[in-house]
Length: 602
Image (cartoon, rainbow, N blue to C red; front, side, top):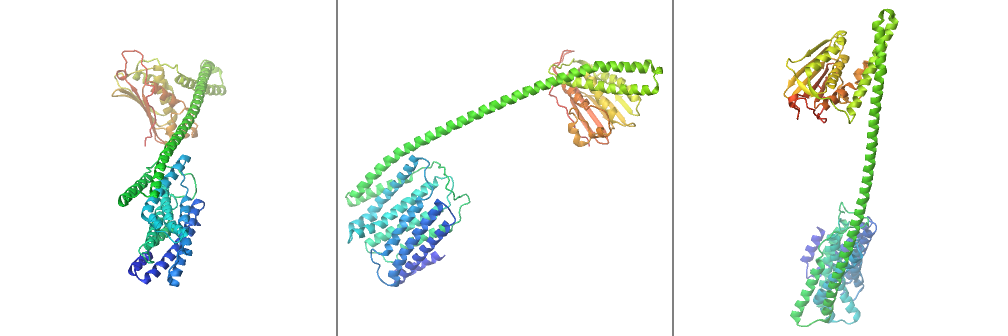
């Protein structure tokens, strides 16, 4: 708002003595504010970025000091400013300080060839702009002459400084655009401010040469706008992704058309000047020759940089390949170790199964002998055994039965896990299996107050299976129901046909199984908390053995249970007509991968 009011006021009083005062005081003030703001911003950074703001602020303050001297002559003393004067020292301090600020930013190329090529780009742009400036401004100033060589040098210092600043602004913009992340410097604002300043500076030199410049001229707006943009840049918030560290910045490829554009403009300007005057300027000729040399050198350096980038890429590919090769070797070695560990575990598992099978087999013989002698004592010599010893013998008999059952279960588990396990498959009438289990359990049922029922259809239901193992499945399931159902309860065993499946369902009104334990029911040696709490004897192998046998027969086993309500087990086996590849009593390989599991019934 203040800047707009200053511009509006300058335009309103243009071509009047008041315009000098508005311009002089306004330019001195805005340059002072820009310099102070830059120094304040410098205190928030370290390293290159702090140095950038310190140098830029020093340049603005130097120009402000020169403007103060100019204002003292014109607005305070009312005198024409002599040339040269102390004001020129302040004015000429801005271009080198601004150039140093721009060069302090961490924008170096990653390779030596890239850095030299970037320098060539800057020289090409600088030479092109210098050629244009010579044709438009410097040549007329130089040819106009001056009272002394020193005055001529000072007159040329302004446009040459402008060329340097403009070149570095374009160079900095080009390099900044090639970076992955933003810098904590608003380059568009700073660059635009320096460009506006340089343009006004060049206009000042040209108007001074023809004697047409007076303070309050329209070109003063360019200086004012330049310092306003610097002030805004110093106060501009940093981008969120910016960082103050001077870490290496990775460059991404972009088209570098700016140097070629600058050279094209310079050559076009020289051609137009030649067509207008019909004369060849020696300085212009030398500058065009320099541009050609720079173009050739840049192409050579571009080839060098591309070769360096190619070599670097090849090195990275080789390093990555070596790393992947090492990783592969480590992975292969790890897999070999894992495979070896798995083989050892499998060997240990087989050894364990063989040991269990051997021990179970060896236990059966002495247990059978012990049980035979106990039974002989109890039956044949019952009259000769007093009641106390009879109770002891019955205790031995019960524990012997438990040991025999444990040995049989362990032997069955070992056989089922064995790679050499084979079923003696033949057509089996499941009704006969149910009948034999009913007969085997009848003495146990007769000693309990239970309602046990068996439902068998009149027509035979056949499946291809091993009679011995199918009877073990039903025996284990019915034994569980008898163990976990209290007197007064109900147990039912039903055989039906459902499509191509023979279905056995065993249900009871026993103690049930807690819901959170049902997922472990088919795990070996698992016993529910209710069974342990009520001290019900068992090994925790019955359901696991039954499930494994059913799976080996290509069937499925499901279980539902509710604590305090009872349990229901469903066994589905393929019937003879549904078994793939079965003709008569020919052998059949069961679907070992058939599923078995348990679900909660609520």
